[in-house]
Amino acid sequence: MRKYAIGAALSGALAVSALAVPTASAATPDLSFSGAVINNGKAITVGTTAIVNVPVTYTLVRPAGLVIDGENSTAGILLYRGSSLARQENELGPDEAPTCTTTATTATTVTQSCKEVIAVDPQEYLYEAADAGTWKVAGFYGNLTEDNDDSDNHIGMQFGYDMWGVPGTAQVKRAARLTVNATPEPVKKGATLTVKGALTRADWATGKYAGYKGQPAALQFKAKGATAYKTVKTVTSGTAGALSTTVKASADGTYRYTFAGTATTGTATAAGDYVDVK
Image 1 (cartoon, rainbow, N blue to C red):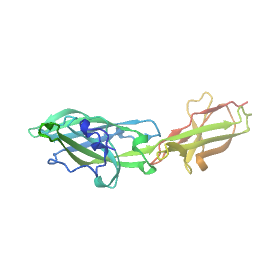
Image 2 (spheres, rainbow, N blue to C red; image 1 turned 60 degrees about the vertical axis):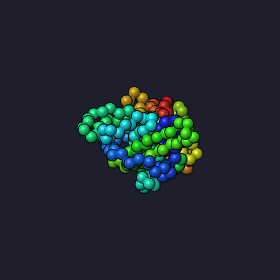
Image 3 (cartoon, helix red, strand yellow; image 1 turned 180 degrees about the horizontal axis):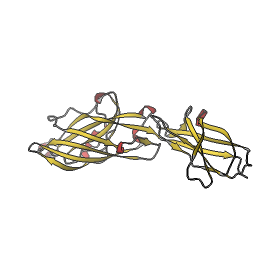
Image 4 (cartoon, helix red, strand yellow; image 1 turned 180 degrees about the vertical axis):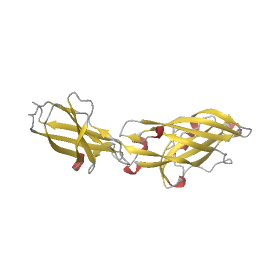
């Protein structure tokens, strides 16, 4: 959802969907947004409670005479999910006005390098599994004109809003977690070790982590004194994301599971479980 207000009087107006905002009261300004880079080009991975601050950079070209003060007028980048600008299903925007630096001017235009932060709070702005996937990029402009002088027994507020599609996309993913537990400990050399674990991922509808079934997780081992893990085998998660397999105990070392992630779910690596082989 669009989150920051243009002036105190607009705090409620910007909380509504782009489909519900009033028609702009003035001519559409000639703005151009380009070169948008979302989260340094990386996927945005979000859990169930922690706010994820997403850096955004872009270039803005505006008319030389257009004032964008961040209070009564503002422009920036937002992310939306949906088939088009007019059919948005969810939206993520900045909390604060962008910071822009002028890089070039002409008699009619000003070019600025801008940056902002989109704070993604899963408890407020992500609602369902469909929010994981590809989001599109848009540029927006909003302006507010207020008449609070009631000496003539009249006050008024006019709000204009424009949005443009901008090249680029961003991947929003559900955070994943992995656990591991190797038993028995300690174990005799050559005996069978059972290595269990669980793969879960954020469920934004419930605000909890839920099992992720049918996904490959690599069981890895790092021998005592070694510097790197080696993959032993791949295990597919079952009901509630459960993982279980057996290996022969050959040497002291640490076992862990790793998950490479999917188009909608982030990567995960379990904290290692050290096993003493007697």
